[in-house]
Length: 100
Image (tube, rainbow, N blue to C red):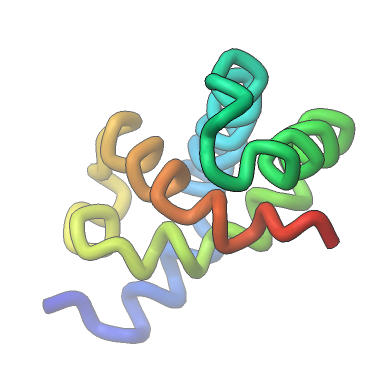
């Protein structure tokens, strides 16, 4: 089990933060290509546009806790793979894509 102090330290990791940023940009591009009938698609496009126009950095900071809450990422820590980070990002998009 990962200690809270370890998780908090990961929150400030440039390695993880940079990779979350890239995962967000990739997810945004994937949203542009998804079927418009996808649940929450309109809000997802709004979210993707906002994420890309800020180069993903601000959104990466918002997403860090959600990514670190993912058991796989949290357990792997700095050794988390890009695929694990992408999966954690993808799993949380609809929580942030609210159209607000």
